[in-house]
Image (cartoon, rainbow, N blue to C red; front, side, top):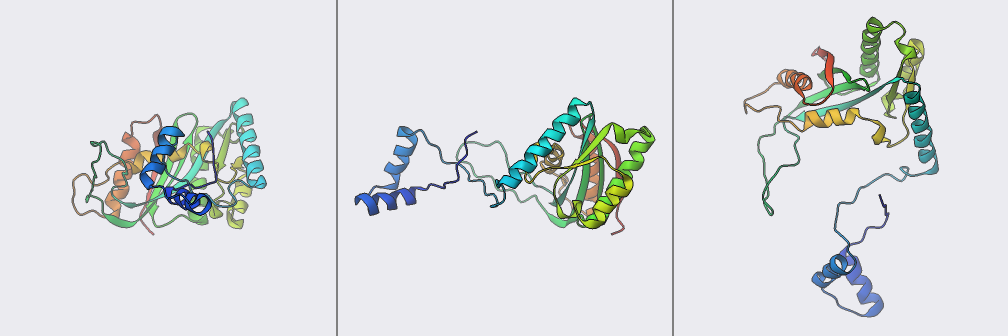
Length: 251
């Protein structure tokens, strides 16, 4: 895939032609030249931070990828842990429609934050918790404790066969989280910055968010939405199945 850091618009081209060559060219003719003569297309610009492709970031991603491949070569089960927040009942952004049609939906309802912490395993299992509020170091540690308890029941020697991978969210690398990880002796790998390709749990979140959580169009409570999310996890037509779901409505 080719990448470019230059944003080109018809306005910029028109100004350059006028300032440097004294030519007044219409927007129509500029677009025609770009599309038909140069074979270019007009597409979305992906905004990234200045640190995205620094040398340190690239090396961090390379080291994480090498460790990821090494773990797979050794036959280890990969567990990708991450979090997401659902704040409305309908987050769908795409639909099938006739060309030129604008689709306006009024079905979505705003609600209190529902946090989902999930772990997608390379053996096809899914571990998750759903609760009110946002995720922080304490909620993340609580999820790890639940995950460890569950894995210990399956296999007391699980830590020799699994590798847990997480991103660089601040609460993943806070001092209290690092201390908890060391005490539990977790086999963990921190991904490099913006290394989304090694985070398959994002596909699980996408599956949940691309559903209507209030199909009945009735007044809903946060508790109802949480229950609907859990049901969707269990019924999602993906090859990942819910192993346990912890419903925490105390906070």
